[in-house]
Image (tube, rainbow, N blue to C red; front, side, top):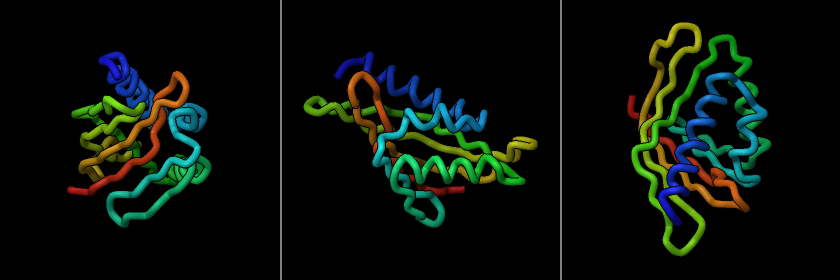
Length: 129
């Protein structure tokens, strides 16, 4: 694993954030591994699989009071023995209509390199505000 791998993960995260802001489901799908797991920050809801996550985002994007979520990586730790990495950082959710803060916290994401691409295998969120 190299600095290029860290940059690739950071670029994938930035693209994922853009896709969330633009409600672009087609751009979200390729970033998620087929069996990706998400554990929500407040109620610890478990969303398992790419299809389930895309359905959840589709519902979120069509909500009357839609939120925009952003993940900001602070560290990327690459495994020296496997094509995997941990991303740690902070997340926030704001109202799409006016940018009013709604929630925020910390997160950890596990990435795996599948072929040439880094994909999210798991995300775990902690709501702090």
